[in-house]
Amino acid sequence: MTLYSEIQGVRRPVCLHIEASPRGGRSTSTARSRAFLDELTRLEPRLVGDRLPLWEAPLPEFDGATIAAKYARLAGKSLSAEEERAWTTVSHLVDGLRRADAVVISTPMWNMGIPYKLKHWIDLITQPGLSFKFDPETGYSPLLEDRPVLIVLSSAGDFSSGINRGRPDLATPYLTAAFRFIGFKTITIVPVAPTVGPEYEVTKGRQIAEAQLRALAPGFLERHV
Ligand SMILES: Cc1cc2nc3c(=O)[nH]c(=O)nc-3n(C[C@H](O)[C@H](O)[C@H](O)COP(=O)(O)O)c2cc1C
Figure (cartoon, rainbow, N blue to C red):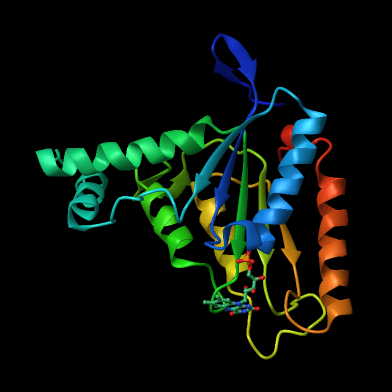
């Protein structure tokens, strides 16, 4: 089932693209994701693209007021004016995510994990009462409905063939856990790797990713667990 959003009275699917590489037009992960979105738009011309370039968008600091608001909400206490302001800001970010019928995240691997801007955004949108809830009896439960999520992860090392030069991939398990925590279970991770090394290996890695993305596009918007 596709959860179409209502825009100007017409129900159209929205795909949110979160760009985590600062490399703009030179970014491998952004390029592959944009090609995927072009293909999605060709297949579903009503698609509305929503873009969140994390290095251009001024993300609010995840500061003391935001953390105090988070703890106050977890404890069921009322918020001060400063905490309310901080909470309104994070609420808007979660609204942007909730509005999306599908989410595409393009990110490089950085130091075995993800760029700090992507971690910053995840810290901001992972909030009690907005994207998850906590009950001492039952523990943590997600508050966002499942929707298709594609993560295009580019890395110098190739973790499928073992050419990782001794460095582990902590990005894949972290991103999978972070999105499952808020309710997104239909996650596909497409690695683009290696992006450094012999030319034929780099080309082969890109071609494998392109083929995976081409195969994923038809039906992507309808995919749910
Ligand atoms: C700060 C930084 C840290 C990196 N750390 C890793 C790493 O731990 N493992 C890896 O395989 N590649 C690492 N790389 C290489 C990038 O993941 C790789 O070049 C990727 O293709 C860049 O994607 P982009 O073009 O979308 O920015 C790192 C690159 C940078 C700039």
